Image (cartoon, rainbow, N blue to C red; front, side, top):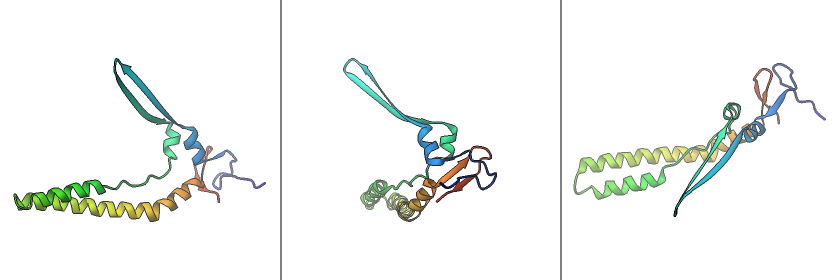
Length: 132
């Protein structure tokens, strides 16, 4: 069996970032009932260490907002050219941002996530490194 050690300090006290994240993050849900009404609260909490080694996140896209602002820009064409131009510019910028986010999610995110899945952290010196 291969020996796994921190390449910086040589400590064997290392742990996979994915395991730290999973063991330090807890999901919770609570339902409160008041007569006929019911409210559910959901969330998660993480230790500081789990947050520090969290996986990369996919970027959000705003395609629905692009459609809404584009439609509003079209609707205001007859009423106010300035308002229509502003709404159209917002739709264009949101569209550009969504295209960039989609490209990141398709091309960069999978590589970053794979890198995260092979990342380890040394509990002695704090070094973060890859083992493949």
